Image 1 (tube, rainbow, N blue to C red):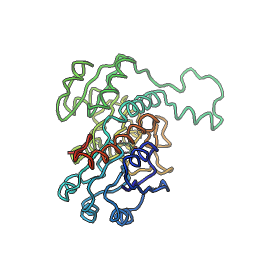
Image 2 (cartoon, rainbow, N blue to C red):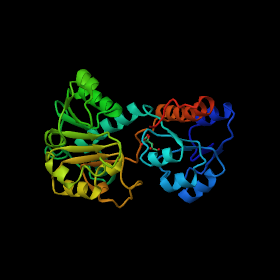
Image 3 (tube, rainbow, N blue to C red):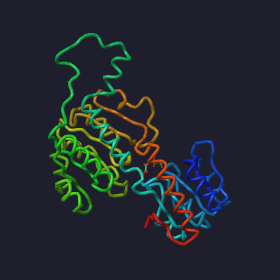
Length: 317
Ligand code: 8YV
């Protein structure tokens, strides 16, 4: 088994205990695709992550691979159809980072509503001089309307936190209705346009697919409230960055909180980093000890069970 990065020790221990020979990329730098193809030629299984480009070319070159187990819930870096065509089984780690990612969305929402990143910077710049009654104003979140784009596992936990903490009204837009969330959270299904026009905060929790790529674009931002906050902790490709920058500059929306960008990493000269009502984090949704260990367990278990029983506990179909 090749481990494309130095994953948590739990994954290494589990695989070694189960008798696998493992090789680890200990550098912690993502391996360029051509190099990874050459390495995979010497291996039967790959423990991969979002930074590995596993496209049709890769899968054609590595069709001898039995299983690719993704250390993530998202697998937009993998061409699943091409994997199927080449008889390669794919697994992932759904649910491992649900709470951790919802916390980041929730935190970004508060950070943006009170301009916390900007406030921190003003102190660093020596600009905390005296109290000004009308300066540094954000706004409160109590009773606001949260619009969830993609009310699945993570979106539901974000909605649950917002309802419990702020009594928020929850609306959502999905491919299909989420009956459980409607019953438990009183969430109301709305059209995409209603989500845009009615939400005070929009939080994105969908997968990145051909359907969701760039849906938060100029048109969408123009439909949103001028006072709205846009939060994205799913994939940067779901919003169009140039349109988001424009929308923030011209006041179409009030603020934005991002844990994901396109491309990643974001460069330090990005104009978003200079904006008062913006908070950007370096894709830390799953960065908790608990989540990363669970991701390690699930992704290792996929490989172990596949060779033992022929089936995966966490398959991607
Ligand atoms: C990972 C994620 O940090 O699980 C996901 O889909 O976005 C994060 O947990 C990232 O994908 C690295 O693989």
